[in-house]
Amino acid sequence: MSYTLQIAIAQSIRFIAVLNFVAFVLVSIYLGGDASNGKVIDGHFFLGSHGHYTEVNAAIFRYSELHASTVLWALLLVFISYGWSIHVDALKRRSQLSRSNVA
Image 1 (tube, rainbow, N blue to C red):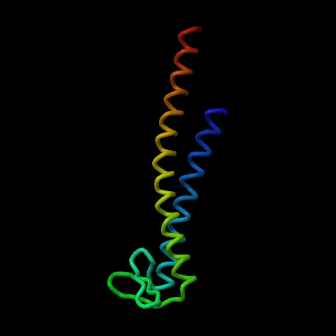
Image 2: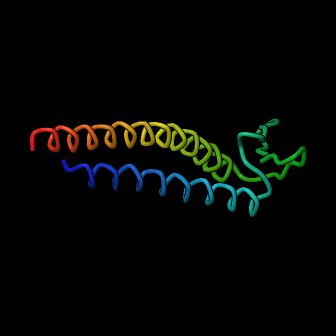
Image 3: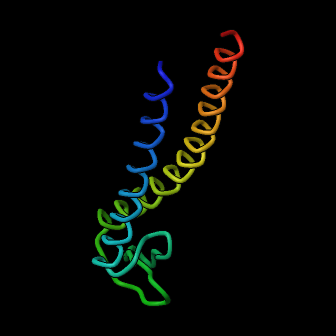
């Protein structure tokens, strides 16, 4: 796989992660909070935001839980993709140096 393609894949991962985060924030604002800050009391589901709770149905609460977890996993992928980009860039430079030393 070419260096350029590897860098493009890493950048795409970061772009998608940013879009996912923005979507999470916008949906959380629209719904009045998120499940990671919410709570369940006696079968009632509440999304939380800055100490304010909004009651929602179970499906919305589960969606919010799932979306929050995807944001965390995407953050992990962002760190991995940055590390991979640095690694690929170093390999590319090393390859270019070895070619220039041979010539």
